[in-house]
Image (cartoon, rainbow, N blue to C red; front, side):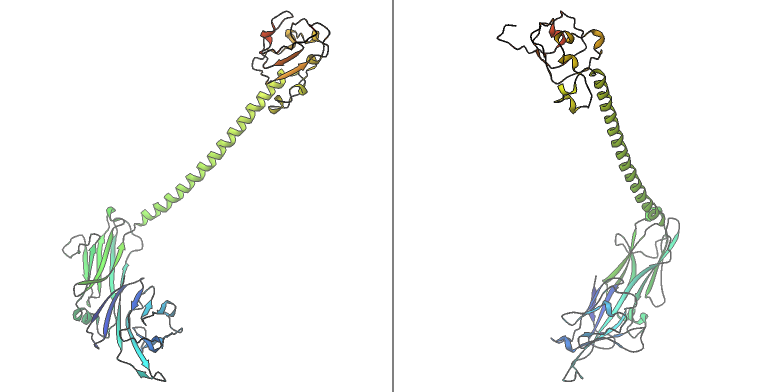
Length: 372
């Protein structure tokens, strides 16, 4: 925020007072600038120097100054200063030099007095129950004392709370005092639990108009530590949750593989008399079992399986098994065609003369013209 006021000054008729908070950027106008900034020169007078220091010479920035990296010249010949510090306050003088040798000054000096407002705290560790003192200081350099400046320009410093209400000395909770030259105002109070994130603001006014202000926000040290710890805890919880999800997924995969392996083992135990080539079309998709189907390729009499030759397993299912008998001339005791399609086989026992429907879930009969 940039606040400035043009007033009839202390040492001339062309003077400007600019109030700025520390850390902000400022724009200092040159009231006597010409259309060509090549004639513009900016000089600085402050407490650090016994004589004026040239910052801008005929439109060119000087690189041998401490603040040259934060300085720039605007298109209107104004002086721009970034990231104002308390060492930047003072008097800035804008001049215009013309003539062949740039040795003739055009017009009078334009004075810009820069005032910097800054707030600091007496405590580095802040927590409830501790006493804290806030210092609000106006840094000014005008060639006269701060007290004279305060009176002549009717400048005031005061503290307000976060609702904008001015704090007074009558409030028993706050102790407010000013320095002898009235350029420093202090606020002392004992912090409460509810003061965490509370704001107090120092304002400077000139002729009852607010020029700039600085806000101080209370940040409890204990609360800051707990916030950092909370962030760390959340990160740990996230890592644990991700790891637990991965472990559960891995266990589920292992369990599924064990169940599948067990099922394949049961299938191999029940299919030990079936030839793998007879069901390679479907059963090989589930497990690689070596099944002997010699009984299906032998004579029809050998296909009459005794109860002792059939495993008593009720959950064996074939998708499709097709067997052909090599001996069609010999009559089979089981009155079924030589070409049989098995949709499923259960654990039922079939005798020599039992109905084939009890042994096969479906039976497809082939009709032969030979009449057999």
